[in-house]
Amino acid sequence: MSWRDNLIKIEPYVAGEQPNKTDFIKLNANENPYPPAPEVLDVISKFNGGALKKYPDADAKPLASAIAERVGLTRENVFVGNGSDDVLALCFRAFFNSDKPVIYPDITYSFYPVWCDMLRIPFETIPVDESFNINAADYKRPNGGVVIANPNAPTSIARGLDFIREILDANQDSVVIVDEAYVDFGGESAVPLLSEYENLVVTQTFSKSRSMAGMRIGCAFGNKEIISALYAAKDSYNSYPMDMVAIEAGVASVKNEEYFRATLAKVIATRDRLTKELRAMGFELPDSCANFVFAEHKDYRAKDICEYLKMRDIYVRYFSKPRIDNRLRITVGTDEEIDALIAALKDYIK
Ligand code: PMP
Image (cartoon, helix red, strand yellow):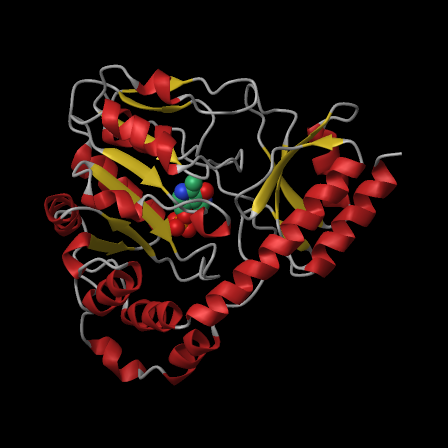
């Protein structure tokens, strides 16, 4: 026996590469290319650093209240955490305590199996179809919980509320998590269904549509009992996950609806132009409802394209995983960044 036998044995989640240089085009982590709302920058530059001597509000109440007001819920229906990864990990801990497997699609956010492994939650993946569609009928089986990313990642495909309803109707004895990290870019939020389904949890993030990936703010919506369980899980792990600056800056972001809408419109317009350009070059990709596209070229290997783009200082994401190992996940950047990407691809694809 050695102490090494007691170390965690886990294959961790691998995030998009963060190259150690500045002059490159980063389209590999689904970040927003535009800055956060100007009021967020104001909060940060004017923050009274002396205040840091005290602990922050343990439940980030000002931020939870601002988010609740914006989506038409009360603060008791909102949990705020340190990025939606933190919120989702706490959801897995708080809601998935059955001996039956948690179920989710085989092609989805690759952090789900990592949390299951770390928290020792049994799970089963359910294959999406050839076109990457999730079939609601496949989720009518005994389970200890359901997780659906909508829009799904990395496929970029969104499904409507009829689909979410079908899953909820078939799974009234499990908690159903709908991960809406990308919903603002074209999905339909399941938040309105919260009044009908007490086992529904919806998670969202400030990392994508609010351009605040560097600050780490995520949230969950659910009924009071669900949200209390999340606070209990948080208070059994880290009482103060949200720092004071994040709480204030998050409120400032939520208050500027106009900037939020305008930024989304820019990303969506660039995404739709990118989609057309890629199809004209012979790429196949589903219509994206997110801030990234998921493209394949039948005549070129995705891995080779990815390596070539890297040589041109353009970073996109490639997953060497079954079923998706000829696909590129390309984040929507600014128009200039996407022009550079298209020019590089045109040099490569003759
Ligand atoms: N869910 C999905 C589907 C994602 O792609 C991501 C981003 N990697 C997250 C959740 C977590 O994002 P964050 O922790 O930045 O909120």
